[in-house]
Each structure stands twice: as structure tokens, then as C-alpha cells.
Image (tube, rainbow, N blue to C red; front, top):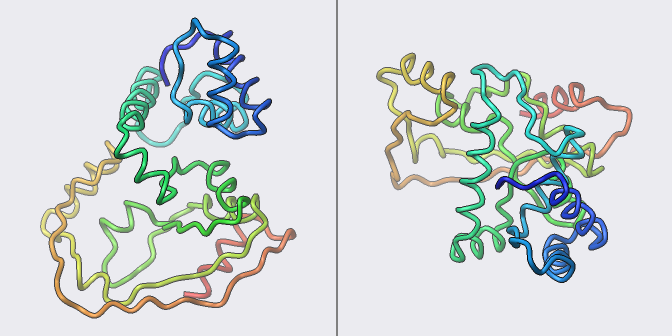
Length: 225
């Protein structure tokens, strides 16, 4: 996110509330109320609201997730996202395909609007280092928190032969694993595009149960695999 003052961020959040959390309208309200200010990207309003809700602060919060990350690094990531979103072509594709920042609140909002949402709990880590379809979710509970927040069922899905179609290089696996642990960047080379028959299996929905904790819901989903 660009270098906005506290007053500007407060006004952006106010406009987002007046627009009933609709970022396009919030941007229009902001332009009408503050014509002499720099007009932020519409997704800035949404990200600011999510940040305030999840961290109780307008400023980026540095969490302990392995490698130390400075506020400067987080601000840089926000600026990169702003530049990408300003690209009209990418914005159109992202909007049509509902490609969004993967926060709990933003994902839950998509589901609350009646949309379907695909989440890979293992993420990049599993896609890079899993072999023979073994799950590598660790203690990841984000998908469970999203489902509980949105009060929606989870529909398990599995695509057969996807590992035969695209593969990761096994040589130097420990080296690439260390690189990923340090940078969270997928350095492991991927090759493939092999002509295999892929079949997607869709399991029975796991209905919303308010009595379940995210940990218990994760366990329940794991047992379906």
C-alpha cells in the first residue's frame, strides 16, 4: 500500500463503510469527497479494511512466520500489488476469475456473496515438495477458518494424474526446500504438460458445524482423503 497518512487511511475506511464494503463505490465516494487527493486503487480500500479488521491497525503488522520480515518489506509487497492491479489487462482477468489476495476475510467475503471458491490448503509448499499425492498441510487452518467464517460447507476435490501431467525436479530437493523456507518463493523447476488423462473427483460436502474449531474441521477434512 502506498504511503498514505493516517488521516487519508481513516477517510478511505470511512468511505468503504459508507459504500457498504463495495470497493468501486468507495473509490467513487472518496473521489467526490476529496477531489484534490491522489485517488487510490479500488482494492486499496478493501485491503485497508481487511488489515484493520485482522490486525486492529492501519499499519502492517510483522508476524513471526519463520524468516523475519520488516515493515519496509511488507510495504514493498503492497506497492508491487498496487502496480500489478493498475495493469488493466491483469485487473480484468483477475476480476473475472475472482483471483484475490488470500486473506481469511477476503475469501470469506467471496463465499458470502454466493460464489464458489477453490483453496489448496497445502499451497505452494505442497505443490513443490509433495510426491505420491501425500498431503503436506502442516498446521494450516486458513481454509477451515474461511469456511467457518462464511458458514459454508467444504467440498473435497482431488484431481487424479495431475502429478503425472506436471512434475517437479527431485534432484536437489533439500536445497530447494531450504530456499523456499528462507524466501517463500517456488524455486523448484517444474516440467511436464504430458498427455495424460486427468479425472477430478468431487467428494461429499462437509456441512457447516458451528461446534467445530478450525483444528477439528481440518481433521475432519483430512479423514475424507
